[in-house]
Image (cartoon, rainbow over all chains, first blue to last red; front, top):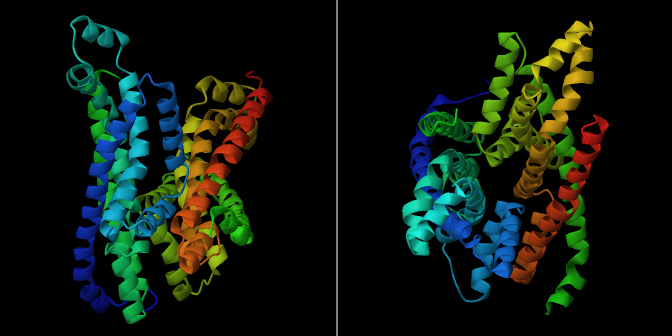
Length: 222
Length: 221
């Protein structure tokens, strides 16, 4: 291959592996925010308030149909304009979390909709509060069918973390850029980043498929 | 500066950015649809070698990030003697990336056509090419169009990343305006709204119409 240098690969590999840790951390943090916020969005969309329901729907549509990279810029730069300074890490994880919360809320919504109406009526009949109904009756039944969708978006978040490099989060892409501009060698760092992404996302995606199949089997869907 | 003044001062730049974004979108879509059809059909081939080629393409482009692919195409490909200018590198990367996702839709769409249709086409002695283009693909297309609507929105969002290699698209212009005015909410907010309008009030209705027309074409409505 055109002057691929293995000694350079070994030189930069430790830095890239360190940065992979940061990438995983950013993805994990963003995912945690998305899981919680997505559930809140899904439940809030079931409120009886017509207006707030429509506003939330439109908000979810808005987040889903605009580019994540622009949302990252927005959250990172708009804060200081109003006197709130967010670190790149915080802004990045919030942006990714918010973006994927919109996607996950749709996954949860599908799961909640799949719970038979009788379950809601039964919960009302035995006088459970709304909170109890959700925690004890609805969510335990709604979440298993949502697991596959949740897993797919975990892989999705992981693959979107390079966008955080635009505001200077020191993840993989950012590190590869730094190596490139220090050494004027782009072949090895960018190729290695690609290989690292493949090495993590392909097995994870395969695991998600296995999970999906086993959930389907357990729930008797196939 | 009020928001109205802001818009009056900077609307030409937002406009030119939007036009570049639409150009990127159209060119990337064409490439994406072509690659999706090619790889999707290759994945259904009876030959293992053909299937393997398609699988390698799909897994590589779905397994890594669009940004990584974009940088690789723009910064590394020249080392192999293939130099693309930033505009071309931009839509080529987006098209290649989304095409890999589209290939799975094509495969699913073709598999969703009932076997009776294949058998009927064989029984009236159609050649494999004719069978595909006249019987299978039109029905597969109708089945997969709704999913394509979503994928094309993802593609539109993907084009925002070309700003990182300095293609003067909408995201790039918003960033430039932000650097010179420090009016972040206005510059990024306006760009977000333009993307939203493009996706929700242009692309989505267009796809809905196309779904209706295609369904009528094959007599499903």
